[in-house]
Length: 388
Image (tube, rainbow, N blue to C red; front, side, top):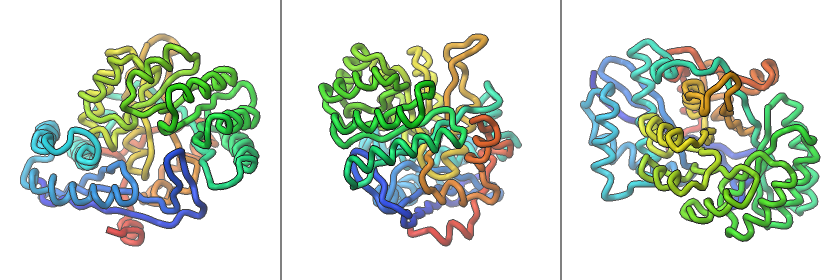
């Protein structure tokens, strides 16, 4: 079997409402799908993390840099391919967009491997450590509106997410430390005292401001405080973890095993959040997961993107060993964006139906059982929304 073609599909549509986080507001949703074709008719699908113009730039890396390196290679040699591509791109970037581009290609190669082996991805990875996966609903996005309106909306949205059956919820912060505390108080009020909520800062704080907000999150019994400071600030992570009760989480902006080694050795994380569509794909995710567990750091994957990304993470979470083990082990959760996302809900010939699974199955979902990722994109849908 040989690789004959690699195609990037960059999709985009106008969101029904402006949404944002601590770094920016956005009016369009995008997705970057990667399709790898072979001479035996087996096709694999992957996804690259990175929105908008980042996706367009990554498309060029996928098609104009990576594709010429591996045309004619056997797609089953995915680890050989990974190291070949990484080594040839290493002088030009060990992090960021080259790794995002490689991630989409690698995921597609694993999809091909599962189809050739006639196994779902989680079986190919060693089997299911759990039958189902708890899901947390992620909402409470920022908008350019008065803080009082944000406070009222956050309380209502938090209550609504809880009512839909999710096991926990996550909010955005980034309006400034004092206003962010008010937003967190509104979310706690919306979900009540006995429901997990988390706050995601997208690295908007200095360490001192992160402590200010973190102490308030301690009082509100938040479950985790995500990306409180810049990903480069390993000392800040370590200081926050030592000084706060709330779990410190992060890692979505870290890449490959070498970056993760430094992050984990800094001892700044209670919960690791690798992003498989960015850090180097499934091949590198497996190594990063092993590093996290070797450092006794539990993992809850960062998930953002289309149904391809969601399906990939369903398999990875299913195949993740319990850490630590026991009769009643600590369990990971699937991150689920509750805002409008056609690329997750309408992309596939047979939808994943995460929301209905959550609603009907006490907040848990199951991985697809088909071969490889177990999902098939609708080509007419791709053609309709493709911009590049």
